[in-house]
Length: 419
Ligand SMILES: *[C@@H]1O[C@H](CO)[C@@H](O)[C@H](O)[C@H]1NC(C)=O
Ligand SMILES: *[C@@H]1O[C@H](CO)[C@@H](O)[C@H](O)[C@H]1NC(C)=O
Image 1 (cartoon, rainbow, N blue to C red):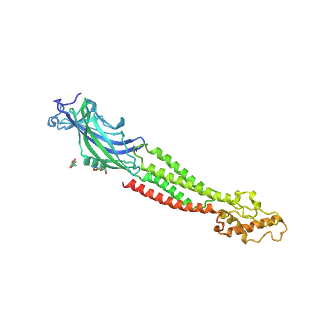
Image 2 (image 1 turned 135 degrees about the vertical axis):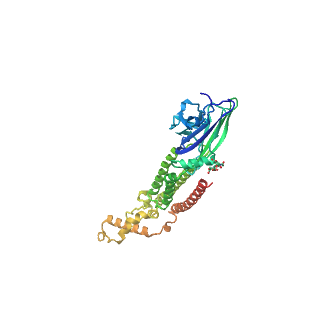
Image 3 (image 1 turned 30 degrees about the vertical axis):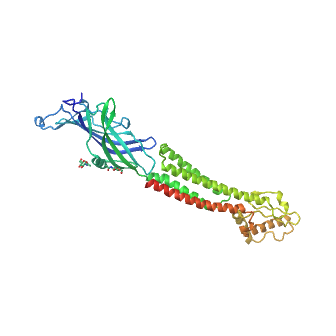
């Protein structure tokens, strides 16, 4: 019933051996580490021993565990009683040595450092100690040293999930409470490294791809806001990925995960690029409006403004129908080209119907369109001022954008993987 010793002043030496069988789960968000371990303990029961020669050479017997005294070992980091398949029997040897073993799933707490997630290495500890027997009653001793324990674990490891088992170190420690005394503690430190492939494939690469899409969108013609819509879509796709990140990682103010820096800075870059597109669109639009508002020909056109015609504004002098006001066509080139060019090769379907004023007007419009298409942009010098500015802003921004993104990514990945 009580500690099996003949002299109560001598402590019972309990040998402890822990093997890591499998790493079932590691959860960063809740900071839990769930390994499957096999625990073997042995100690000497000084009151039970026999000479095998007297008992037909029987060296050991299995007896029900509850018949004998057992050290009350417990695991510090555990949060709930682990499920396990320990044997109900203990092995009693003829010299009085009692051996118990059993495996169990341990729900343990582990303070994880997610700074380098998913290129991180975690150290989780399993500390064993007696609950009520201080160190003058139970002396805890690890049965295997670190290299032996690592070797054992490597030999029996069944599954590691997305983690790679590195090594186990074991050391003894004391747990000291001032008035109550001190307790022996054996600490196993399990080092595991994450296999980052999954996170690289499902998270880091998609973000890089979105970034490439965003960069590629600089080469889109920015008519009708298509480019803006495209960029905003890319930004939305990013925010979906952001949600996944929030689900995976804990929020620790002390150590910002580099992956969060990666995502949020990339997000900021994309936001900048959307803002830049808006600015360029604004400048272009202003150009169109301004040129629509300052007629070059007769003053008659000043009153009617119509910028829905995408920069081409036409009015007709009622007298001879020959004065045509020109707007800034340079921006709208892409649109009008497609409509105007095929007509140049066609025979004029209105030939011979000169008398009709509507037909005449239509012909004038057609001529004007063709002339507008052939005219180089520079001719519009002042009226396309903003447009030129927008284009140089676009180019400068793109170069700066590319440069800073490359610099950021290189520094981040170096920091992530090597430092
Ligand atoms: C660890 O223990 C093994 C035997 O179990 C022994 O051969 C080895 O030298 C020990 N290593 C250290 C570093 O003590
Ligand atoms: C275990 O691995 C860690 C990290 O790789 C290393 O720092 C430590 O020295 C290793 N310990 C032993 C006993 O090999």
